[in-house]
Image 1 (spheres, rainbow, N blue to C red):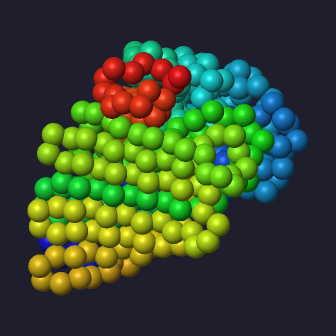
Image 2: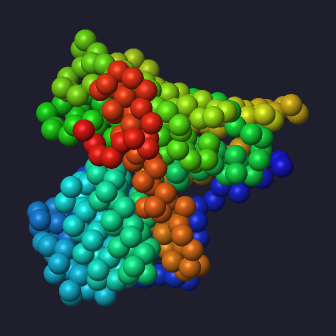
Length: 347
């Protein structure tokens, strides 16, 4: 296959254009709504316990939408066929369960759950209700990762045996928040998910370490390293959230027939190169992670519903991403390798 002809376009839901209700209007919601407005999706309702926050986003993106302060009233009053639940994990479990019981398809923000038992119950609940439940692992539709997934799936570089993904950026701005395990569970989970896409599922073992840099502002560690061990492959993930010099994001996917590399100052602007025996080429990528990754996640859910299939970012699949990420957190805490199958909940 020609590296320049790899189809890495966003999913296409075709003529399926359901009404959408969004529950949770925090900072990440802006990117959801920007992507949905760009795609022409029909958002009819916004919900947040902070009404002013919901009104501000409504006025900016969807002036005709109705604002609610609780999701139960939204579900009772709106015909929205799809619910986008963007809150933090703990309150979201109940929101997703209520939406499923109301017969709605659901796109859950990541991280999906902090307890795998909750996730399994939600998956079973959605199956019983005959609705689709997916998780907004929006990094899958960042241009560079979208290309990597498509190229590996097409066999462009043969059998993948080594993946390296690293990010050096300044996250000292999170000082003062009280979110535990943020480095791995909120940021690292994207690249853990990508490794699972590229290497075909969960690793056998996970080894990880975290550290606080001398000058970092947050209490939570900003330095982390994760190694994912597969039967015939290895992946290494590096995180440096206290980069005071040059920010950079890099990736390398090595296979039996070639290598894909990516690099840029941030994850919104990475250049991809494909290196094979016949030479090196750089495919043209379009869009950026923010907001296009969020549009891709919703588009894949809608396409899956329209085509009566399971979405690639299904909640069922995402349980593996959650388990692998929790295993990394456990490994860093214990100082030893951990099997994803041995963990059940976030410490």
